[in-house]
Length: 121
Image (spheres, one colour):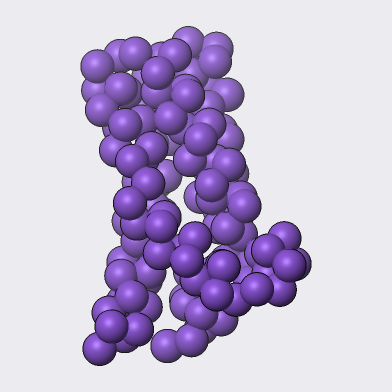
């Protein structure tokens, strides 16, 4: 699987991401693989469970930025919506929206892990 095929499987915006990264595929690849270690999704889920709107909002906001920078637009939009709900202290609505957000996050992570395995294999 090439990086572009990885993006196609994710539904990400490969061309825009390449443009943001000065068309350096090695840089995009490095950052995509780093996404697997980003703790903000897990932090957001944990803070939502604890009912900490401020901390969950900060984690969701950071996840949004990383997602949008990488061209993972659907995840970025869901993260943005969760962030906005949390800023309004609408915890239950944010928890509800976190379900499809987590599904999208997990789907992306699985594709990246497959890409990583093929790189290492």
